[in-house]
Image (cartoon, rainbow, N blue to C red; front, top):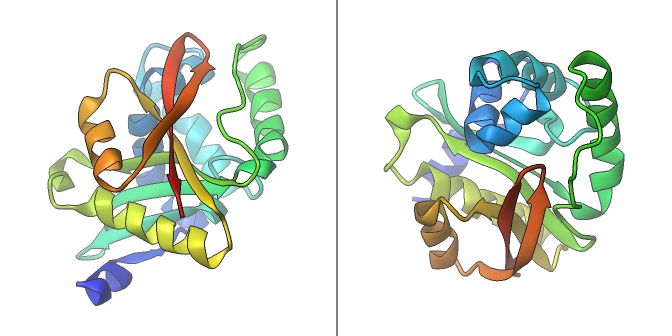
Length: 192
């Protein structure tokens, strides 16, 4: 099974933007629309396609791994060192202020120094219930351990108990709450 996971998981490339941006938007739901100043998730895609292709930001291909099944991207996970959040967030907030007129957002730091932070995890609906999300989480956990991180963290929507169930089954525990725009999320961590 381990070889299947490794064989199906790879680092994302900039040219994956058309397949990964919809996964990012799907994972972020309303938050993606808030950032793109729209109510239509499809209209948020260009924003995340743009940032996925750029280096050194929250949504960059550099921070993303994908799960492929028969040559098709089925899911993705984006994670980065929590200490880099201010550096990674700055270009994104400047861009949405200028290009989408989105300013003065109430956004807590969603991660902390010492934590490898999972920003987004998403699997296309037709590939869900195959264990792909779990495989991506295990791959990121392995990366976190190899890179010397002591904690793996993420936010989960209080309205998404099935996601929390998956994280809890892997050992994630609640450590607090974080506000991002108009929503409050549960901050979960896994001690490595």
